[in-house]
View 1 (tube, rainbow, N blue to C red):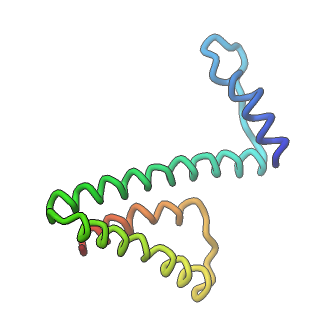
View 2: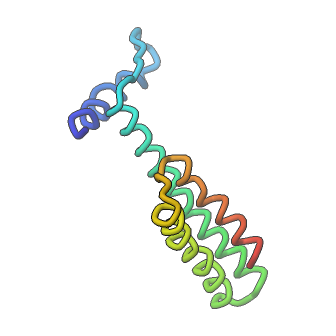
View 3: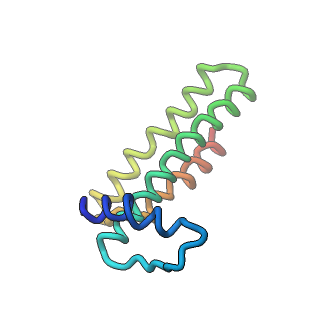
Length: 114
């Protein structure tokens, strides 16, 4: 997997991004698929950090209390480990890329409940 990541990052991506390149690339294979999925998941995870910060600012603005706003965001954040435990351990489901996007859904439901 490390060889595939290095090859993709150092050789294939720069060639694929050139506008005048006469070469078209088709990335195939399990290693390439896993690498691409991990890149997208990491990118989306960073967006959840921004969502939490925006939610904190929104709560702070509407409640007028930084402690109450922080308490609401921490309450929502702490629901993720519990949900993961129930989903993975008790129900026995596997975690994949789609289930990681559930953070945005839980964030929205939690914001509505606070």
